Length: 216
Image (cartoon, rainbow, N blue to C red):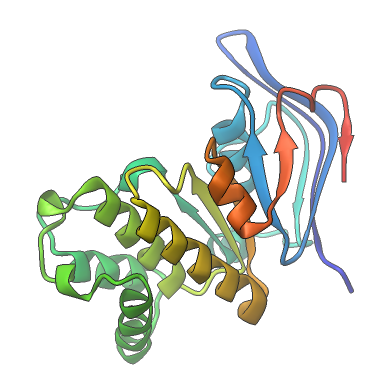
């Protein structure tokens, strides 16, 4: 059975200004999808609606048929732009442990997966530094490691290449491709980075053209 993320008749406005209005958006399990378009076209808003962080004003959101918020929280991870949302005074490893423990993960699993993804992201030397001392690029890497340690089925990334140099972008591409191919993770992200989108071979959904349309 091919599971899908399906958003139907979605509308969303802020202060009476409509930012999203479309009939249908469908994303298959294990797809790589990039939301593109100019600033203000609703890319981050749509990503947050899928991740369950925002509610649409109207319409239906079906995420792989999951109905409970508890299920969704376990299966979806949202990574904020520029590595935001972490505790500045804690070390990188302490942040990973804290957020993983919130998901009731076993200590042994946290340690094993932290080692795995820190190695893949070339992050080992930064694990014991406080977040306040990390560069923007390393904050971005840490945010992704925190998300991946929880082993999500869907990962939502807001401008994931902000602050990353060319080498780090390629590392990110390799890690996301591996998660997609080996664990069938659905990757949905916003981006203005054409090279990154092409590197992932992601399907582009242009939100400037989506209004009133069906996108499958």
